[in-house]
Length: 149
Length: 260
Image 1: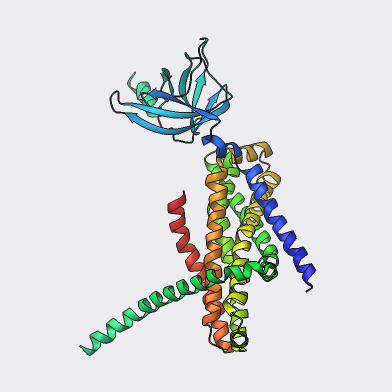
Image 2: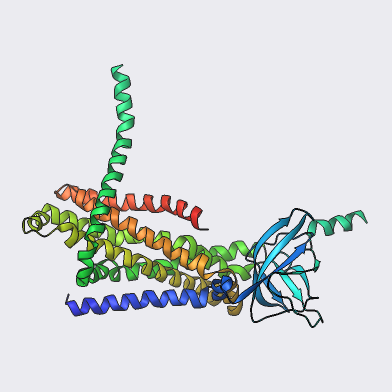
């Protein structure tokens, strides 16, 4: 085969490969998750008495819209509460009396952190803690209450 | 005593020959790395290898990816239907392809389509004493023949894997959305919600590049080791496919444990 034909076909091949990679990153992957740890985000903390099966990487939503992700989950050794670290997009700020709760998508879906904005004029800053929290709904506890009543 | 010695020798010889092979592979890899500069200065040598190992594998990769995606869609649908969660079919197909099936199957298909060809070509060059002739003319065959084939394989495998993944996802989309009437928007949005660019797409392609190194190395090694007879070349190509498949599957376990 002629040299120019080989060049042409290799060019086509590389184009197909790059097009596939673009397809995978734009259409298939959630591209926002790539930039979740960059500088355009700030950190918030929230303490929960029970986080259920919340995992790091879970979305943080307000009115159903994703504004950030859970980056780490630890245990506060003094209060024995679970401390959830969230990375929030810099474009979104919440008032200091906002509340956080752990919600579930559907009956058996993934758990996520839902934030409800408050009415205070002061805003939560980097490394602040959301004090008003309500814990995850644990199905076993609900059933137990139902059974013992 | 004599029997015991024979027994130990019998058990030990495959093990020691495996160690020898690893050593020779390492030595060959070192020699190829030393020859990379020569090959990069002559890009046409590499482009030709990308043509033979990559372009000519497009069809088999795209078609296999399409069918693997369709099977995943069908099997996933049957299983997920029992739990009433067919809506996650998109993420199931995409994650299975991007994380495991794409890199592993592309590497194995590459080994059988292109790797065996590389082995046969080098083996035949050896049998017809072309490599020795090069040596006589003061052309280093490792630099001139082996290194371009090695680089060509490393370039081709990640590109082929991306093609395999994409065509598999489209195959899953064909079964899920076109044939089984799932909602199109749910299919894509569930997929986008659970696939992350860094963890799934990029790690999958890194895996593919590592498989490319391993399969190319095994192919050129077997070609150089082939006995210069028709029988020797044929058994070398067989060994290329068998060893590559085993190496890819074993390495896949290690890489998955590291990455995900």
